[in-house]
Image (tube, rainbow, N blue to C red; front, side, top):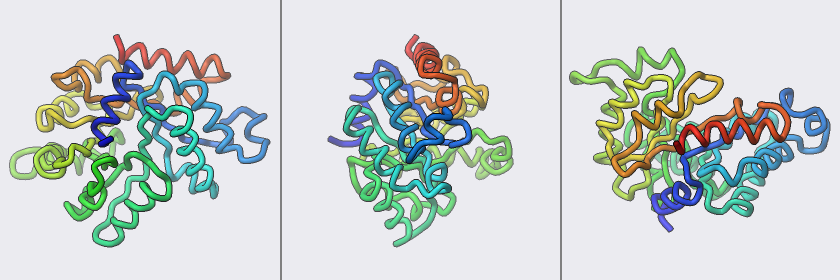
Length: 264
């Protein structure tokens, strides 16, 4: 199955484009989990079981695992997702950006070591930093385009040849990199006008849209501005607003609220 086929299946099976980010922070976990053995893996499994039937994708964050020496927990988390919810796409949020053999090693790390379906990639170093992630039609690169952090604007909105840099990235992704239909773009929910411009520049590409929840983005507005002509095209991610909503019931209700906003 190609990546584009798996993503389409995930959208259709889940009924919405909800993605839950897995950003484990031990200090914010329930005390019983934080004090136990392998708290990162235990917490990830806890959340996956609560929300797995609602999502089209999970997005484990690499640094949140690596910073506490939990790379093996990350690998086991992804294996657990594949086992429990095999229709869900796994996006490794690692924001890799390098060239040549190093980029190839990062691709092997994401796809062979961790068995992720896709990995976030920084295109700042050009084609060489993206293409090594696109050699496998069953795996994808999720390319940073217009991100949510406020300090990104002076760079990503810089005018190059008469248009913002982020739309040039979107056009390059649409016209050059997506030959095997395995490119996505990261486009934040907090800049709706920019999101609309990216959709115009890249009408066929799926978007990973962070910024829902604690960052203030609106899933309903994202759907209105960013979906493709076929009604799909969005993987809308919420992380901390779901992970740390409270007890099991509160986590479930937080996920259902975002799901409802996307599906309506």
